[in-house]
Length: 477
Image (cartoon, rainbow, N blue to C red; front, side, top):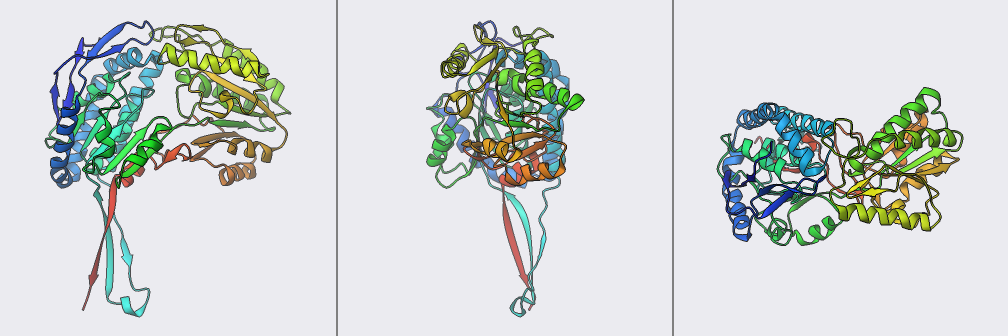
């Protein structure tokens, strides 16, 4: 179902100057397709085209932007199986989860289509004193102009969607650099965008090397950079000059299970935690990594959680029964295996997992991990959960906050006051009560604090980032 070759998209048009980017099947390790790789000249042409497109994009009417997004929604539905299969192959994501991500791709563009007609301003009363008695004010939002987007491998459809759909809704031309490990989904989106009436230069989708991508960060013609990935984002921010910056840089998400989570509520917490920790082989910025369980329910939770983790099937992502597919590479799997070994050497207990077959790791559960070990204090980005017992809810909140990261946290409690206290005190971008930190629906504000980044995605919030307020004041003589 994959093409042998895929072009990149330069100023809305497909170009196939080479086939220099091999895209591997992440389970077999074999080359599944080849994509065109952009050079420095193509990147310069894309930035120049986006600059030229800024004015015609700004002038697009709301219904025209909405029509582009609606077209994408229709075509994504028609090509649903193709998109899911491509994702399964290039990212190693189990086929059931791949279908789920295509559904989220559709949701994200659908919401963007709706929001494209709701980019509103406000009337501001000016008469706060006598000197302003004869003045009135109002605001509107205007697009910032050309944007550059850099996306990671782990959600190669939906994280691309969360950048380009609000950009189209806001009226911003863009140049996208998809992850070189997983470019195919973005290129299929480019093929569908090329079917629309967007102005020439409105979009370019260019797989390229990190070195050649430097102008996407440094060029002053780019007015906003949105980057999702690792801590290297802070280095990009330092090089970005005066442009606006949106960064989502990961985390080591924690989830609290309080003492009142018993019986069926505990079973529910276990089931949700298994999904949060091992969905997509743990390769998610909000994957459940640190699990804090009250001592009153710890033993029962541990027994049930370990049993459920052992039962997960790992292997070929094309198999309908597979829950844990391969990590993005053997290098990534070896890195995580090394972290596990160092934790065990430091006194941690390995409750299950630990075996590796190529790039596939079984679900790993640890306890008693020293707080200075990487598997506790850094982002694991793999199928691992670390259990820790606590005796006091306030203590658990402090443990969650004792991290350089702050993306999302989950809290299982039936106590309304504790839920509000967690919301007040946890240093994260989002607190999910009664569920895992991995939960996200695509219109909500999403982003982090501390080392996890700055700015917010979620369509309406991303549109706000991609637009500027413009004030008009009227004096009545």
